[in-house]
Length: 185
Image (cartoon, rainbow, N blue to C red; front, side, top):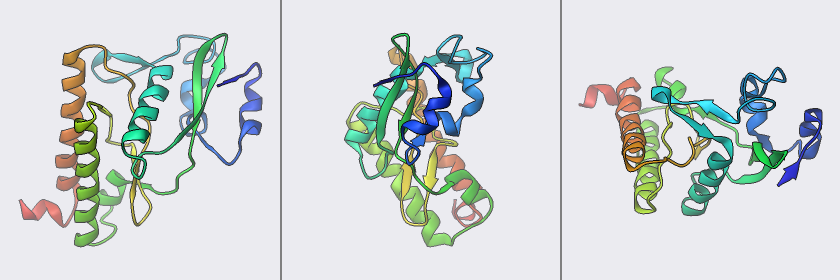
């Protein structure tokens, strides 16, 4: 963990690392509307919110379960004893949903991406983990997928099951968005 007083230091800590703060800077405005000076929770689906520290912990568990498909969390960032952000491995790639919607790649590549996503979901299920927001959080680099930005740890069994359903629905959504796979149903 790195305790930070001046958020301008964030970019100097590890410029080679992909930082959640770089990726979703709108969640960490200095006016306190999210994260830094205000609440450390961020809005989620169905009016639920989650804790960034829990997100970092969940990312660590997911990476341990599937290091080839989940970005590596590197360091959490703290202010006044609370996690306000974190750095993770820099990954290159395009969001899978965009890749499919724009018709990039061929049928075999789309099928391979679906297989990798299903393998990831199966691994999470075996490890009793859930991502909960795969829609815009899987990157594809032309060879493999990398999962980023889980929602954190579900508070109840019902929350866990709801998030698992979101993960499973994601496969159907990207299959339907593929110009190749949508005709195969």
